[in-house]
Image 1: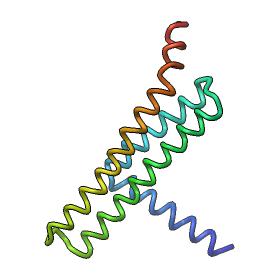
Image 2: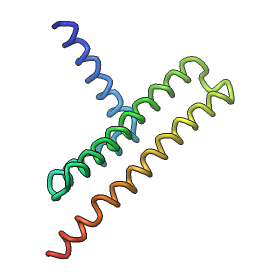
Image 3: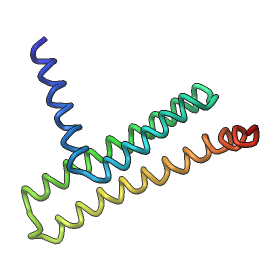
Image 4: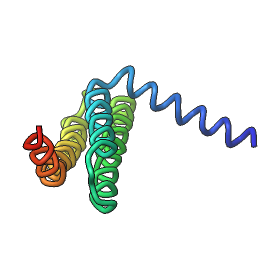
Length: 121
């Protein structure tokens, strides 16, 4: 049981480290919080809630992987090699694609519900 508790502590430490040191992770965490509030407030179907949670989680996890890989690249080749920059740019591009498509998906799913809600006001 102590090993499990220790694992959770390390995981929480990693999340706090990302939150403190990575601006993108903070922004994406705020967006995730907004999505979760909308999921709770809007009358979404279970599949809509599930998809929104999955893509939200995917963006956050990908950002954590991006931050980890950036640190690993800095550790092994701190700005000495052009490929180090390429690796960082490729990972950042993957996060950008995931975030843009998650936002589009969020608009497609949440947009109509928000319009109905606003129309009732």
